[in-house]
Length: 330
Ligand code: TMO
View (spheres, rainbow, N blue to C red):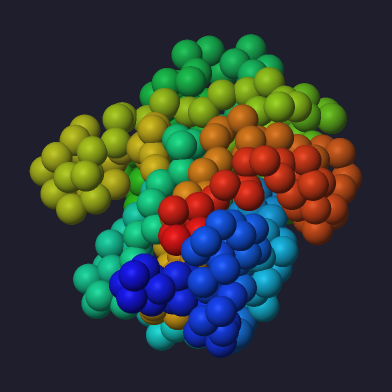
């Protein structure tokens, strides 16, 4: 009984009177479902700079708020999030993508201050991408060797022989790959995801060749016809062993993973400070379809991040009210 009691207490908050805990134990189960938070300190959720990540973060924030937590959002570029998580200045990142973040994640995890809160069901891909009409002028796509032959078609300056690749602001060794595969492209890095869509829409409107960074799940696949470039298949040795792959003298002569993971990462103190919130995060699970739909609500249909998150939370209560059940309800 004492063990049960203390388990209960750690789940529904130290300030709850024993009599309330007892009544919960004898059958007033709704107390546990309402789950008073363990610590009243704010749970700090990281916002990055692409739509689905922001909407998922806001949705989780709303779930926590409805469970009685105080939530704060911290806007950080992916490259700055690691230090914040490591030091406990921020606590949660709901969308860590293998293709752009695996290296940093592995590096920081070795210090022992961040934890893996599990994968979403969604599998991910982040890669060079083009609208299908480009194949009419560059036969052989999506094979990367075709792209290399056609590089000049993608030049924005007629005097240039180099194609222009529009890259996202995430830490990818894009230039190393261009060198290793001798692609004949210049890498133009934009500041935020929205800048990519401006480039995409502009090119599509005039049916100009364009190749840009894109990913899946994302809204683009819902609204545009296009494909990822097929580079040599990803292999972990590609990044570390120059002798591996088509270029025997350079690393990064391969594409990104095609069935990449999508992880939730947290500061290691999450479990002790807010065990129920930690359990909710572990159970949080989005599929490819859920993520591309949420992104399209904003990027194609014009909702704000907050509106899209509120809509999802309102429409999916049966789903999210079960999150963390085993821990939160004793
Ligand atoms: C990290 N991202 C999904 C934008 O590639």
